[in-house]
Length: 223
Image (cartoon, rainbow, N blue to C red; front, side, top):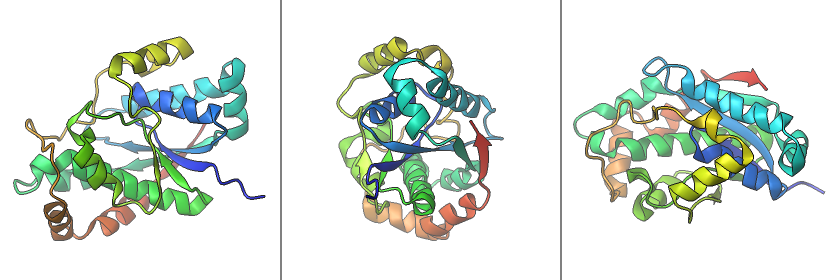
């Protein structure tokens, strides 16, 4: 019987995404991790933290470690996105930067899913933590994907997620400066206008094409 519990995990190097991965490993999901790197705009720290957390799962004792050794892919796909995200710093689309960023990430997850027959996309998003995670913006983000989105942390606040990370041992691996806002605006949009988002993306060549171009530059890191 085909395993229908296969997902692409968007793993950022922050505190939230490893917690999301652990929760879905315990639910029996097979997970293929993808990391979108913003080098050279940022340093390599986010990628290093992502690798460290995933390797930690593969080495740890207990139910999470056992599940990781069965269900977590030993290959991390790393996709360079810095030059693509720079496209969204134009004056006419910069306030929507973080929404465009997450829409691009979801498009890349779709491309990854096609290669491994994944049925879902997994994220560490939780409602209202940052501007891209308002209810309206989450809706605009997930609309670009053909796959359902798994958000096991959606209803948790940051403090609860930090406690989960501390309890399983990933917190110290994940702490550090957040780099996802390196090119972002000071006053980001919290209520997405889907028509304007699509017009902006089409003006830059289309989101599908932007994602395809980034996907061609991917590399694989063995865990």
